[in-house]
Length: 213
Ligand code: ADP
Ligand code: AMP
Image (cartoon, rainbow, N blue to C red):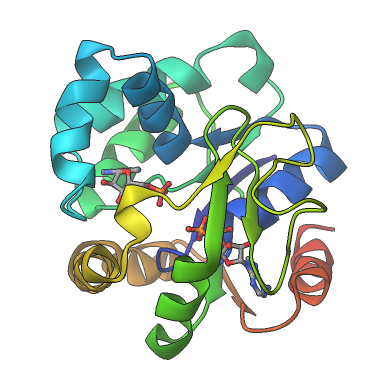
């Protein structure tokens, strides 16, 4: 099963993608996590991506597409995957579609996690991320057992640089301009499914599993 998660930054795509990955036994592929791991390891790709990420801008398609196509060509993606944060532009969606067409494959579902802008800034200023294992928490809604410590791996939790309020409003603007058009793109292909992302995370997950079966 191949699934795409759509939604504004902070809508809960990553939170749901991890739960989907676990339930259906497929990898969770997040381009944002791949970029952050590269930044942490000081790679050339990481340094290039950081220039854009810190401003709330998208990393150019040329860089992003290659990384994603390499990742989904790996063996563990053979049975499917859940993409979180990709595609984010129409050209990215077109390249993915073309690459899958060549293999005689297709995306099964594009799940749109719908959360109004008003809720987003609050969500993101409360998000705490583990840069080591990729786990995310929320200081009010989904707190770690011990403040600022990852439940999964014990590393320190941080407020991501791009979750600071001044960057969040820019990311929302970029979302509306460049990513929201994907809703029409996948509606036209008959695979768009929208869920109410303002609900409790368990209820959002229940709506998603109703769709995925
Ligand atoms: P995205 O991957 O779409 O950027 P995340 O999954 O990281 O978003 O979620 C953003 C923030 O909101 C995180 O702090 C997360 O813990 C929290 N969150 C996720 N889902 C919910 C929910 N249903 N209700 C409240 N908070 C949520
Ligand atoms: P995320 O973790 O999905 O919120 O992504 C964090 C940041 O990484 C984004 O704000 C972008 O700067 C960059 N990024 C992640 N995925 C993509 C993508 N598909 N296209 C372009 N930039 C991306």
